[in-house]
Length: 196
Image 1 (tube, rainbow, N blue to C red):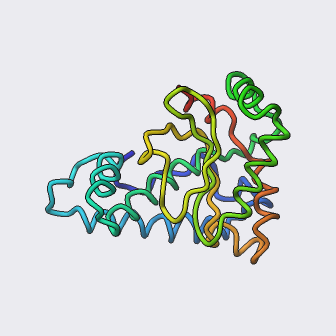
Image 2: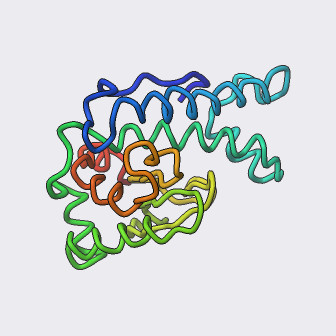
Image 3: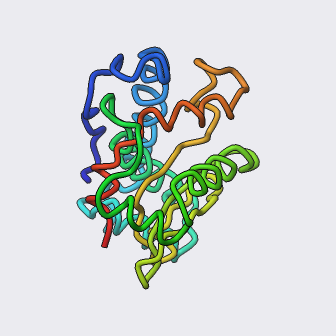
């Protein structure tokens, strides 16, 4: 990932009605763009200028540089999140991701329920993640604010943004309705590509 706002992998109206073009105007066009602009300002004329986002995340996290970490991680998280969605998504997981979900959660329905509850119950702002640990086992992580599995040595597979800016225009304060809609858009092909 570069330090530019990535192009969306679909038209901003393609996920309507679950996520409307108006939400994308704010979430992608303003919030994500602001993280990128802030990040570029923070690394300008420093040793990190020209570094990858992953390197900036790792270094800022280890050094406790909260402002730099927050902007770098939010840029990375959002870039990842847009790819977790697809107008052709939804249904049930296919190929390897489907087999691993069955293995590690017992069934897709059990996984879906656990992931949804994690996303709904996360207090305040943050992300619900599906990640693989060092042994290849899938786990669901509730991560506050800008945090990401990258800082825990885990492989991100899928995520859902549950900051209010992700859903407030379309759902007001009804986060559970937004989480429910997420399952109509999940890009299982992308999830498969992220597996170790």
